[in-house]
Image (cartoon, rainbow, N blue to C red; front, side):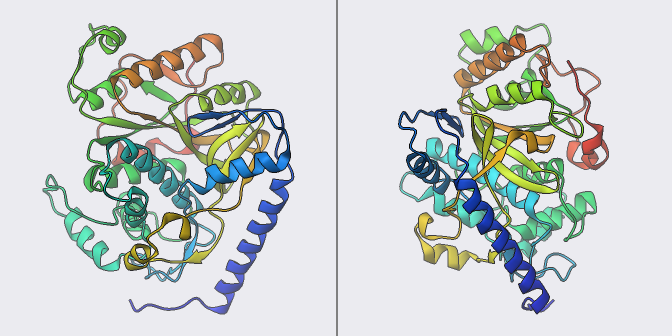
Length: 406
C-alpha cells in the first residue's frame, strides 16, 4: 500500500490531543505534594527543601532521563490496514513499549557495551518506520524453525507489534490493547529477536495475580527445580550459576470498579522496593506508564501526545537522546484514587542475590498485609500451565477474569 498523509480531520484530532496534553501538564505542575519522599523506578529521593519549584525540577530531571514513547503519525500503513497513525487507540501499546524500553535501559546499564550509547540503541528498537525490516520479520516469524536469532534492529516497532497482534489475537490496527495483550506480545518479540546485549534478559509475564518462585529460578538458572527442594535456602546459600537477569510483569487487579484502599497501601509498598520498574496501567480507557509515587499521587509518562513518526535513519541522525522526541520535559501526577484497577506491575532482578532479596521482601509485605492481592507460591501448582500461554492468553487473560487469591 502506498504511503499517504493524514487528512484534515486526522490533523485536527491530533491537535486536540496535544492541546489537552499541554493543559494537563500545566495543571499537574501546580499540584506536586510537598514534604514527602519520592519513590521512582526503584529509587528513593529525599528532598528536605519543600519549595515546590525545587521538587518540580527534580522530578523533571528524572522524567527526562526515562524513555518516553507517544502516539505517532505518518508512518507506513500498518499490516493489512490504512492506519498511518495510532492516535486515539495506541496508548496501551505505547505504554508497553515504554515499559520494555525501561527494562532494556536498566539491563544494558549493567550488561551493555560501554563503548556504545545504549539509549540510542534502545530507541532504534522502537522506530516507527521499519517497513522493509517488518517484511523480513514476517517471513522469519512464519518459518517453523526460529531457533536461530535474527539481528533485527527494530524488534519492538509498531509494525511488528501490529502484525503479531493480528496473527495471535486477531486484533486489528485501531483496536485498543489490554495490558495482557501488549505484555505478551512484547515477551514473544523479545524472546524471538532480542536486541544485542539483551539476550540474557528474560521477560516473564505472570497472570491472574500470581507469582511462582520456581518459574523465576527455572528461567534465571536455566534448570528445573524439584518440589522437594528448599528454593529459598538454595537462593540464599548456594552458588548456582546465574545465566540470566529477569524482567518480571505481574498482571493483577487492585479492585473491581474502583481501587480497594487496602490494595493501594500494598501497592505503595511494592513501589518502594528497589527492584520496582513501573506499572503498565493508567485510568479507565487511558493508559499511562506509572514511574513511581509521591505520597498519594503517582508520577507517570503520558503517551497521549502526537508526534511525527521517526525511522531508523532519523533516530541515528539525532544522536543525542535528550535532543530527540523520546525525552519528555513535562511531569504528570495522578491521584491514586483515580487509577484503573487493571495493571501490570514490573520488577527488574539482576542476579541470584537480588532474586532472594526480592522474594523475601515480597513475603514480608504479604505477612504484614492480610489482604495481599498477589498469590505467592514456591512452586507452580499443577493446574497452572504456562506453556503456550501466548496462544491461549486471549481466552485466559481477559481483564474481567482475573481471580483474587489470598
